[in-house]
Length: 102
Image (cartoon, rainbow, N blue to C red):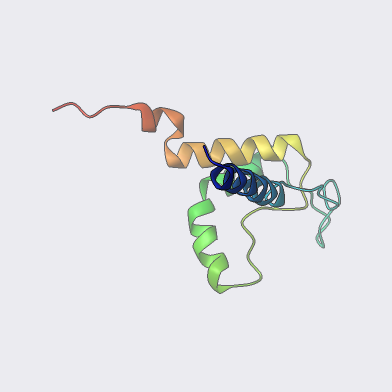
C-alpha cells in the first residue's frame, strides 16, 4: 500500500470513529423522574411501546408531540420491555435466520 492509500485509510478510520462516537447514547436525566401526570414508565409500558413502535415512528414523523421512546422511565426494566416488545413485533432474531423451504 502506498503512502496516499495508507493516509486515506487512516483518515477514513478517524472519520468513521468520530461518526460512531457521535451516535453513542448519553445519560437520560429524566430517568426515574415522573412526568406531568406523576407516572414513571415501567416494564409493561415498555413492552407495549416496543410492540407499537412502527406505528409510533410513522406518527412521530408528522407530530412533534409524539415520541418513540418514553424518557420518563424506570431504567432497565422499561428498556427490557421495550426491546422485548419490538422483538415480538419484528419476529425476533429467529425470523432472520429461518430459511425458506420449497
